[in-house]
Image 1: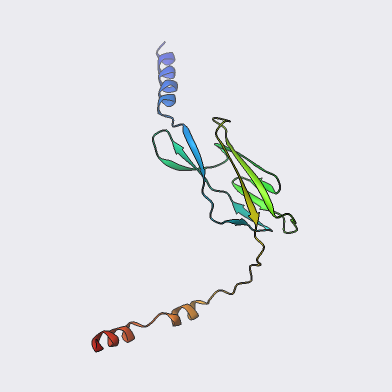
Image 2: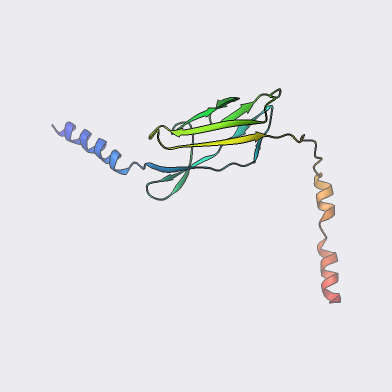
Length: 137
């Protein structure tokens, strides 16, 4: 009898303290998808206690018109020829709680040359030069 009471108390307690997802928000790191790579789709959930937490495939179901989801990341083949991909995210807890959005494919090539560490350091004014300028003022 004591074991049954203990088990029922534990089950009841876990249900009382579990948070429910009230709403979900798309929080993207970029405004377009890159071909030939994994594109992380960040979904935040507002919980019943008011806190925002990142959600993953343990709480969400991801769907896309093209590409392949692996976890929260959408892989877009490098030979993909369409302009956009439609994405839908649904919570496992409540199928009515969902978001649909469209992301366009990045067209501009990633050929921008980044500065080297040395070039960046040369752009920063040295402390001695700044100190001399302050004395002149």
